[in-house]
Length: 113
Image (cartoon, rainbow, N blue to C red; front, side, top):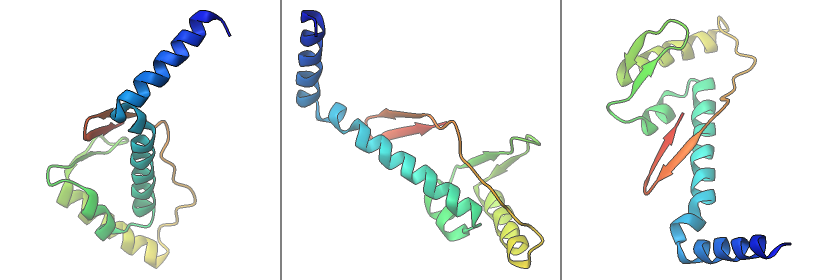
């Protein structure tokens, strides 16, 4: 290891130990990613109570295919109708993935895209 890299490593370790928020970021990001995964599972299963419990009142859903815009209650009603289709067997979902998730942390807020 060169002197520059050693000094850089020591600086990063010291800064990380002095700034608890920086040290906690990997844990916070892991929590956010776990929540995104749980949201995806709830969507897959059309679990309206679980989805409703994590959506804010001002949630807006934009459909990637059609571009239609639904507010929280409209989207939850749509998910509920999907639940009926899943239960009846009219809709079968073999795969559902949430991909290319990006998490930005800022204090007590996370922005997920």
